[in-house]
Amino acid sequence: GEEPRSFRISIDGFNQENVEKRKDKFIPELLEELSTLRSDFIKQIKDLSEEQITGYYGTRLKGKQINVLWVINEAISHDNNHAKELEKNWYYKGNKKGFIRV
Image (cartoon, rainbow, N blue to C red):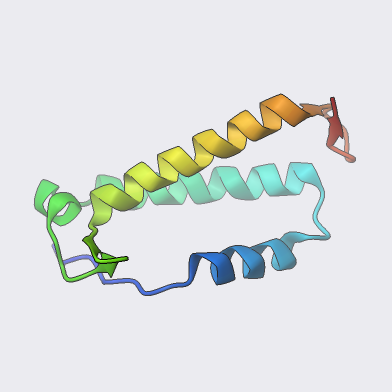
């Protein structure tokens, strides 16, 4: 397989751009998109070799060497943090309006 491509993004810029893109969507639409994106992410990493996941290809973040394994762990941490935030502050009603504050 090929070496993973290096990525250079601004996390804050990425987040702001994606919030803006989705601000008018209803919760069920967002949940469906999230499910699709997660499935795509898992399919992509399943096809990688251990070397592709753990190898270093020149990408650094604040001086730290990062690789695909770092990205996977950050994705898990990111999702867990958002899940805790939702559990603490919101209750999903299961209708088009989606979540309501607890």
